[in-house]
Amino acid sequence: MATRSSLGAANQPPPLGGHDLFASNRPLAEALEREGAGWAAERCSAFGSLLTGEPLEWGRLANEHPPQLRSYDRFGERIDEVEFHPAWHELMRLSVGHGLQALSWTEPREGAHVARAALFMLSGQVEAGHECPISMTHAAVPALRVAAPALAAEWEPLLTSSHYDFGLRPAARKRGVLCGMAMTERQGGSDVRANITTARPVGGDEYVLDGHKWFCSAPMSDLFLVLAQAPAGLTCFLLPRVLPDGTRNGFRIQRLKDKLGDRSNASGEIELDAARAQLVGEEGRGVRTIVEMVVHTRLDCVLGSAAGMRQAVEQATHHAAHRLAFGRLLVDQPLMRNVLADLCLESEAATVTAMRLARAYDRRAYDPAEAAFARIATAIAKYWICKRGPGHAAEALECLGGGGFVEESGLPRVYRQQPLQSIWEGSGNVVCLDVLRALEREPESAEALLAEIALAGDERLTGLAREALAGGEESSARLVVERLALALQASLLIRHAPAEVGEAFAAARLGRDAGLAYGTLPPGSAFDSIIERHRPMTNSE
Image (tube, rainbow, N blue to C red):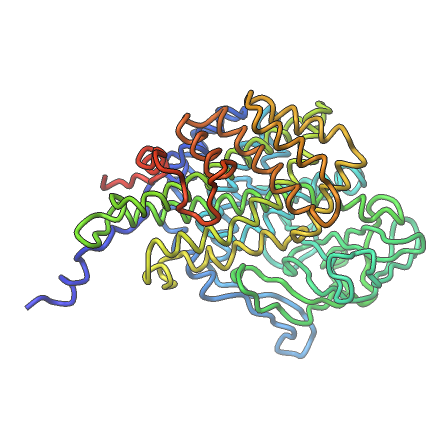
């Protein structure tokens, strides 16, 4: 008689783990070299190998044991502290130690943004939630450099430190700090100009803030960029949790959000009660000031969505390569091959786009054309790639059947996480309207985008882009951005991916017979080679 253990081993894929996430991701490894960070290949490979060991378990534990709010200590004193499972701290220690919040600013050579983007994508495949504070800490540095050089000089050494030093203490007693963000209020949401939190000047660059924030990202952080209404209008401020004398600032966490995804990370509703803060930039220019932070966190939304797609592709292709159904491996069945290849194409398109954007960030400070490209292409990619993420995760989950619907597969976490990237840092409508504004006010951005698309030498793509640019009224903004995104992605794949990848993507996304669901690639597409290019190779193979 067969035992439970012998039946359980039958027709089951081997565990996916113990492999190099970087080397297995050929599009990412190629892009690292192409976009100017080949010098970081060994670093990425070592990190990619490390992640598929114990960090996989840390990710599971951090999500199964979400953070808890402790409002008071045992003496009844208000403390507003967030407690995390030890696995969360291990993940944060790992990412901070490898410079995911700092590398762009501490590595003095070309390709620093590209290298950091690759590391961020690799980490996101293992556990996405902890990357929220990593992303905001990274993005706070350029915002402070541009708008408040003195504050940047004071805080940057701690923001870019390789030490993860959790706990509320004065900055003078810390080896590293994290930065969060508090912009959104209940009555305004994305319309931050409707904010009613007030900021009263008390001398020099010091202000006192009073009000509420409906969504504060990573409220356990050491300091925050906050928007509030000063006498001259909406203004940006830097607010520490602990004041230099060791007393707690007037920052009260009312509750933590019970979220669909991102469950390992804390998000909260907060009250500011005579909270001390310092001016960042000029009064009345808060949106313009904080935009530099948002620009970088939007890029991280793209990187995060691409990481989720890659994780989904790894799971789906690995399962199909080892699972028999109806007498054949799933990967050998024509319709499943179509679905898998289509998922692979979407993942590769997201990866090459994200890495091309990272190169533009490396050069935007001294190259006006790259700055213009980064401005428009970040918003386009933020809308399209993040919008494609949830459906991509759902299709990959289906490739595993009922097993994919089970938490232990890891795909439910991906499925819940992907919509966040589309909501965070501007929902779909907000970002598409931002694209239209940029095209109208900064014509150089359209020129830079067209020049990039034209490098493929394919009139289909330039024609599609020009047609989209000509139809930019508000009600059609999503269609405009979608077409620009597809033209850009097709151009990048035609130039940089194997011919069968670029051809299949263009036919499936731009062809006359393009389908609406995954798995509708035209007959004759190179299914096998596309899948093989993306399937992870484990140590047992």
